Image (cartoon, rainbow, N blue to C red; front, side):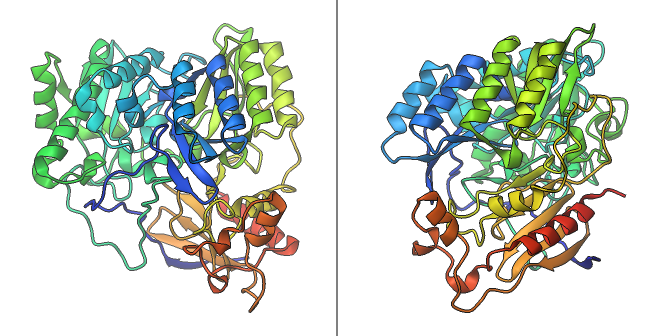
Length: 547
């Protein structure tokens, strides 16, 4: 089933903002078609078992009974009622999940999920995350950052260094850290570099419910390109403070320029975070910084975050992750299509209590449970696999995501989650034994199913795009100069039912297509039957393979 070439859109974010940042949080809820949505920031994805249980109680009492995992290691609760905001906030405060009302949307800190657990990183940098979060919440000026501004803390293995963060800390040997300012993940531009002209048909993901920063793993272009970004070496004990000062320098530059910049590459050229500006900000705080050649900051002696790193490969291995010394292990799993039922989430909480009472939500829409005895880890691996979590990297579900789709989103042209699940259900049998952490299956591209052209939450880098349209699904490979496309599924039947109606009826919810702002029947694709789902599954599986 060959794919025909076509021109790839860039996915570039707009450089000039005309409105306020509407990125949702725990206090600023977003109105969706299935109710209100709350995004709870979890710096580093770090949770205690008690905090995780409270999130389950919140989703059960106030939401739709499920939890969404985002690609920044945060958690979303959907289906909230219009009058539950005060109760939601109080419950999160009591659980220690809302330490600052004024800073709750800016606590966007990604962490290497296996840091300190498998001996692979250069240092355990979880303490950096906690210190950085405390500095963010304790600095009034930091509240002015956008809800989409991202900081990443990488332990030297190069995983979150690929996320296209605005500020990245990378552990280096000999008590030092690399501080890197982000470049544009869409185009590989350094901050302040001129924006190329948007090609015809290119899109901008501006959905407040799932902004580009909450998409899946970041672009390799953010790690290097024709215009490398500033990179400095700083003492490890000053690394969190250096990251905060760089973020504050961005906030000041954005304010002084009068531009509504949400990410570092959106600053006007005259206000860009150049090496000299960042060094000056650090020097005023007494932090010595050494300039790093561009080659070393991307593919040189740091050896991390290289343009060759694929987003799916960068994430933690699924299954048992042995701890140094033997006898204990972490358990790494992923949420199918980024969504967990309360039963699945509570099994993870029980697994955490069998370990050291901790969970780590990962930027690859997964969860790592550390500190388990190896025998216990094997037992819980089987329990979680039986419950439907993705527990093995060989699974066809691994690296597959989807937007909300119908009936939760009125803009969607299909129930993409149901279609994705149908296409994946019979692709591969469930594993019977955990895959060893040091053995990976064949390389594959991540896949994302989208209900409309917005592609909310889509990955960065190279990925397989499964897009619902008026005449079915369009499958293409994004993130390259050229892409391949194949149309699958029949054209809509005149006067026939629109997708979303049957799903809404089964769920006992109002039909999203009846909303005034929803797509009409002529804009939606016909329901996808079993034969077409099989064709979709075959085509997507072929497109995923990395040569």
